[in-house]
Image (cartoon, rainbow, N blue to C red):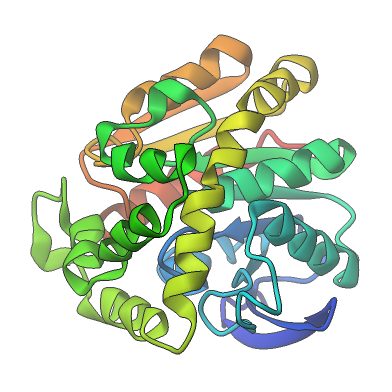
Length: 289
């Protein structure tokens, strides 16, 4: 009998305990779900049961997020290269030979680094507001870009406003027509994690290091052109951080890319999990097993 029950586990990866959610038949094709800022695999709570009817779904928490280990920045260097290395160790530990990957927000540069390193493992990519193009960056990035150019203490301190409860709620609610669909547990859990010792510095480090992702955009785009992976962009069109142009740009480099927009914001799964889940299931039908 097929089950969509979600199991909660941890695995040791390079001295880090990585928490992950897992559901669906173990013998089915794998889909790896990579979350973004400031959330965790909790963001997939509505999507996992939909996908697990047909697929083996695995959703880890990145180091420094959710229920995974979060060593202090003096012990562990919070860069996107290191997040990708942790996820490489994760897929190696779980012996994932081939998988589709869902990339969202911070999960995009993390997952695309995995794709560059393991193109033979990637059966397809679902990008949900996962940016890989400069034209996808809105002006909301301006304060962060200022710190890229000059990571002074003053500019780093200015980024701490992004971890306030108001800013976390802003990310969830902006662009959402019916805000009563947003479960408060989501942003309250995110804020609780952000309030743990050392987590503000972790997030500031990653915001400053986001510049490394933009510098990799040409390599990501070359991967799309050269490998032409099956790709579905599912995009909350009212996202205050990642613009619809970032979704459309996928088609420029990859004729296999399909793009769908939804009338919602950054955290599109909060309001459109059923629709996005159905679109992913349809997309996955054509992927190599």
